[in-house]
Length: 270
Image 1 (cartoon, rainbow, N blue to C red):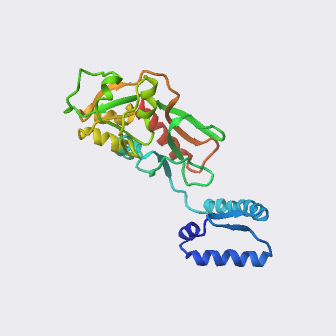
Image 2 (cartoon, rainbow, N blue to C red):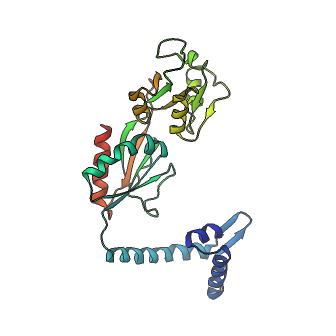
Image 3 (cartoon, rainbow, N blue to C red):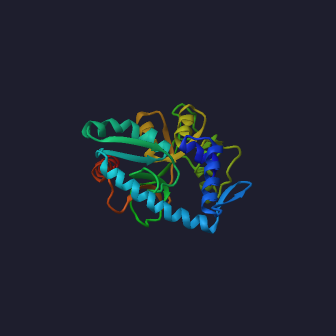
């Protein structure tokens, strides 16, 4: 719904895309799009035309793929911090055991559409995703923990109480767990809280002595084991949050490679 973005995807100019659409509408004698100040929207005819031609193009795409040599490749989409803190250090083990599989990593927290995106497996953080047309497995519960540098002068031996934690500089990521948890304990969230958009950055700031970061234990585990971070608090509440493994429920072109990667991830987490 945007000529500029379509032009970028097609490696054309925005004017060329707009001209092609105008020419198509002229040939058909029908307006396919309503032009608006903030983008485009389909007309009723355009919406029907898009749905039907998309099915045709999908058939052409699938037929073409069947003619191409089979590549044993798997594409995994997962949150950036999960990728950098958990997957990347372990990935050489998978590659060593599966030298015939090409692995492609996409670091993203956006929802994955397996129908339109070239993704075989995804890991997502938060509440259980709707499982319509998906196979969904819990990899690990969220297990929130608070971490800081071992060099920080703590008010008492860990674990700390919430009233003690708020006396220290607090660090959080885009999930804003401090803002959500502190009121549950009857404590107001102090201002300011150092904010990062990624968990890995929040943990790095904590390791550098800038405060106390809150993060899932799975992502912080390596830094905690190495002594780079010191655990000072853990969430004892039962939460329906976790890391979820998603893949299409039906048969996929890269099923063997996907299964090998899924089994390996589950075994590594166990």
